[in-house]
Length: 221
Ligand code: MD3
Ligand code: FE
Image (tube, rainbow, N blue to C red; front, side, top):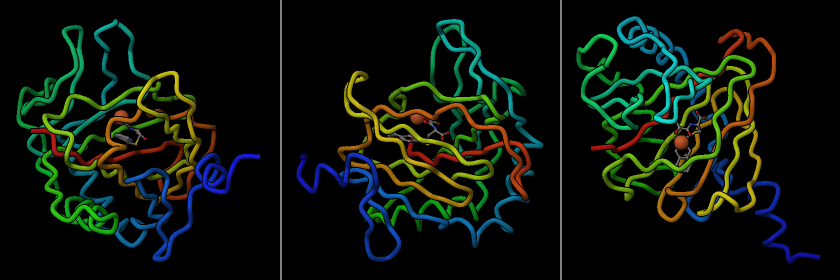
């Protein structure tokens, strides 16, 4: 029998007062935290995506990612045959990325505060779109210049099973279900943990339709 702490971290998150679930030493799920923001958030997201539409990118290894990507903010993340990087320009339009809408930035900053990160100043928001079957393989996020800032993610639409691993690819992974409106904050010692997303199951979300959109806010520059 493993001890009580091992048990809690093995499968489920640790319920905390204030509706936070702790999923790592410095990582929290804020269930439904974005639900009150959806009506402000969706029109802003539509404006961003009209300017920089979703596109499927190719990894340096030559694989086309199943999730389609866009970005807003000063920096956006891109990948092509020459590597992964942040750039000030959308390679599709060769114009700056759309500015980060205030409502999105505010949501990310307040969520980071809920998790104890008081001075979060995101300069990049990556936008991932998953249709059923799309996934994200286990990886680390290492293209940001510093790892001291947290990453804040907002899940919209179809549910996902998030995989949260350790500091080595071979370490066991926790599975965490993420639903429409959930916000997750990762920071500190958890910032470089491997993570991924299982293939999204078929379904239709009443507001978002047959897709999952994930926003991740970072300090990249
Ligand atoms: C945990 N996105 O864009 S949430 C990514 O749901 C990415 O679209 C997934 O992994 C998604 O890179 C997972 C975001 C996430 C981002 C960075 C992390 C989780 C993280 C860094 C460390 C630990
Ligand atoms: Fe990632």
